[in-house]
Length: 300
Image (cartoon, rainbow, N blue to C red):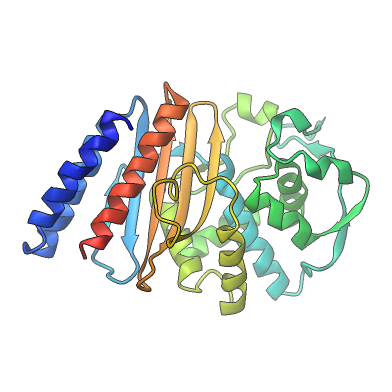
């Protein structure tokens, strides 16, 4: 256990001592603790927390700072696909051809995905075959399949994805393109987000405002099947459910999700990072921030 995590007990004692203090005082203690944890991370971090049982119980630290979205942008793509199904434009049970050739948003030149750069190698054995939208959407979220993402975002249309996020109240997130468009990346044309916007998006799903109640329930079921659990769920007990989506590229590790406590309460937590000098250590430290939020909720 790192010295970083040993400090948790000290701050938990502080929370306990502050239990009889006004709610605002407890929030202030939480903010102080989280900022101390962020200061220990060799990189830049943003945090967004919203207690879904109390609109006033919220914490934003660097909430409007822009970060490369990495794979968190796959959640907006999922929301847009469910929306287009409701509008009758697609049926998630319909089949489409799985291809591995995409067009750069810079000049339309073709590029392909590499199995070596994808967290989902299974998908590549299906190239040239037909798959349902749903059978692409599910691994896009749960194992962060880049190949599936690129096929789906061409159907969904990145501009429509961003417009839908604006309708949900996420004012700064930008979904411009699929994954591994190197020409776009070199020109600084990348998908971006803020912690606040991902908090808004996750809260919309949790409160069944990102689609129909049935659609949102299905989105939550998919998010709960997430296979990468190194941040938000890492230090939480097995009795706690987390519906979430991670994202990572060099020096970047994110997690955005909804945490469901055994007593029926829930909260949204978004942890974004960039310029991490030590990826593994930074990941553990982000997981420590999630643990702090969880312990704060236990004091409610």
